[in-house]
Length: 143
Image (cartoon, rainbow, N blue to C red; front, side, top):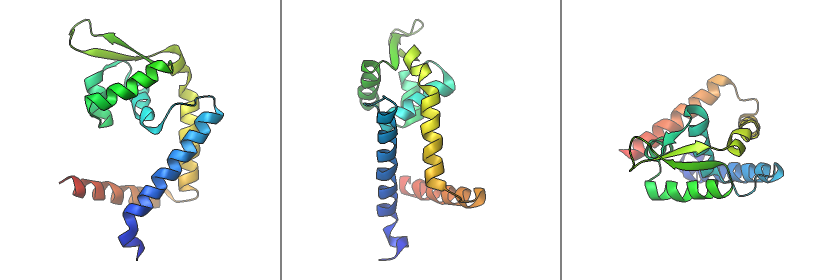
């Protein structure tokens, strides 16, 4: 089988390896219990501050029930808190806690280490081309 025909397996192996790398680094940093899916929520909060849960659903491409499970775990671990929206009682606002805010430098270091490990000495042009191709593949599958 050619690599062209094995793209899904290659991507799957990359995802699994990246996930294992992240979990190992999180454990080393004393952040056991966090998983890859939590990272997307934390990034949304790091970049945009407190937000309604429905805005985070759209940002991280998860449905409300899945996001609720992930947020409950982040709450249990002490990284986020939920509060009712004062303007709309049907909505819940998600906030970082002090622990969640303090975790940001660790999160960014692990992310940088992962990128360095993945890309190695790949040029900027090569990495942009790879990302462009993967994005286009994803777009074609969503049609």
